[in-house]
Image (tube, rainbow, N blue to C red; front, top):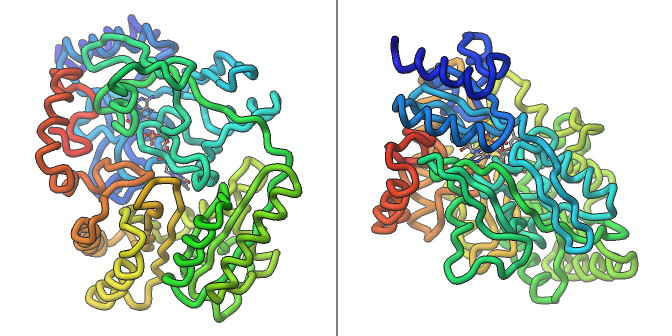
Length: 474
Ligand SMILES: Cc1cc2nc3c(=O)[nH]c(=O)nc-3n(C[C@H](O)[C@H](O)[C@H](O)COP(=O)(O)OP(=O)(O)OC[C@H]3O[C@@H](n4cnc5c(N)ncnc54)[C@H](O)[C@@H]3O)c2cc1C
């Protein structure tokens, strides 16, 4: 009997035959995520298993170790970097049965949930208790909290509240050895000395499987409103954003799109964008009505100081609906792009504020060199409250994945873009994680720290069972 057959039998004993499958039709559903990397090769797993609880996960991890079969944790597969893919085949561990809200503690402003819970469910449950759960990605109606914590997920409210990992107080995690532990608690200070929690956040399932999470929630703001401004170029829009920061006003939403991105986002809504707008920024504020009105007044004044012109309310609302995707409006979102003949892809690199324009110009130059002048590339940035690099930049390119030459061409393009980001003092990863997409440049970015990381990996996952072959780990 092969180790795959043996492990299949063991998994059936652990999770029950209803929740283990080696049928091709089930396995194919886990062979792709939203990345071009996922399309380029075959990543079909041998077995899919859907655990009911963390005790079953402990046993599954022990079985994977015993039979030396790699194990890939799968949230909802909405990743755009190939990071849940079964690169060396083996097992996919689908977390979606673990979708229970375990506790809502309104007094202490926390919620404890299982890691397979979908964001929209957490958001709606919080709302029923007059609470605000701030992590709201555009994929909110399908992606899981475990996936977001593993990829450093970015929220539409991130300009004020930060990334997904900023919302976490504690986790329960199963290591690659099968050992289960809880790290952190309900208090900000439940992590004495070293912050071990951070080891598992953004680790893309390579250091442990997150099974349970205690999250911060906030009292529900009474009111929310927004404005958007058009600018002549990237530089003036960035200066306006800095000016808003220095005014003391802190919007919860800051999205900066170039014209092409904005047009893409408005594809379904068909909202016309004034022709003189080259760059646009959406600002959202929440709180008491008078505070929100005052904040938007300050935002408007700062934008106008830098030559910004207010976009029609129709554009603002349509834009907001495109990023604030709910069960009710998802057909107006950029999800629409996924259904065209072309596949949109991203380069999600971070560059310092001061190099943003330079990076965008480099992209334009490269486009000319690659002969892609006619293709629409969009660049957009999402502001986060993070020190000297408050913006990350994404370029999205429609690729016809039916043509292998075009896909390879795109990979070459990407390499040049990532290298340039590093040269400009930036980073090759952001809200979509590293996955297969930017793994080749992570070692370069980390330098000697890469060895420290591989040492930690060997400690918590000595047989390199977890997400083998992904994120640069062999
Ligand atoms: C249309 C669209 C819009 C998007 N918008 C946003 C956005 O606004 N902001 C944003 O941040 N991202 C966005 N994304 C990307 C994606 O939704 C996020 O990266 C999301 O957090 C992935 O969650 P998931 O549950 O689908 O995880 P998956 O894609 O299944 O997995 C992602 C990674 O997390 C690991 N993982 C999953 N669960 C666990 C767990 N419990 N323990 C340990 N590791 C785990 C996987 O192994 C993998 O490495 C978007 C994607 C699409 C398709």
